[in-house]
Image (cartoon, rainbow, N blue to C red; front, side, top):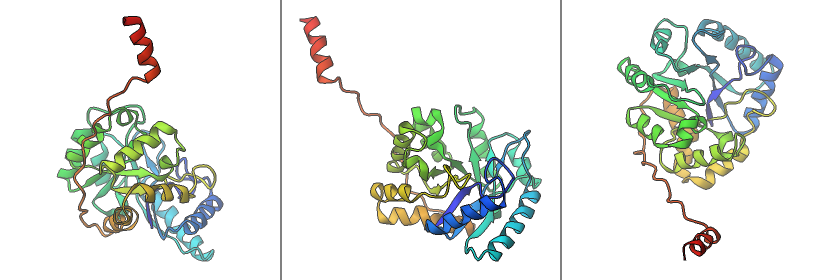
Length: 266
């Protein structure tokens, strides 16, 4: 399997604190069936973010340690880039990395908001030859309230990556429910662990994978875990299923509440 969203690089962001933790995370990845991980440290414009050249040096060092420890895990370089109107300039000037230097760029949205410029950014990225991937949309509060916000972004050309821990309920029941809705409406194209540490937010996602298997077909499971991320790494186009617009279920009055209302009316 391939993880396209991880904070495994040591001491570059709020993920792994040091080399020992990163090595421990790498062992967990192997134990959980992963062969390849794209390291995606945060890049937030105007904050203390390590740039692409520094991350590459850390990655090269980390690869040597993995080899020394006989840990068979391939680590590739990318970024989780916080949305900004200056992002295209950051990409073109080499401050931020696409995923393994491919056309695919992992975008992080604010958790509590949907900036008005996001659609414009998606459009501009495509004009420059990039394909934006929305990281963990199920955790964005506006998408939780209305999944069709993501539907609209996919219609505009974006793709989406689900966090496996969301299916386990690690971020709460509402986010778990949203994750299931997005999966059943063809709005998810990639998976990630979003692992930050060897405890808590770790690469131990076997429960999430088992839940995933129960929700989707075997063919779709293979696409999300292997086929789509392999095409990403090879910088190939990905054929996606048409997203399905979400229709909220009509709320039914509980029988007891309806009986109480009826008694007051009649």
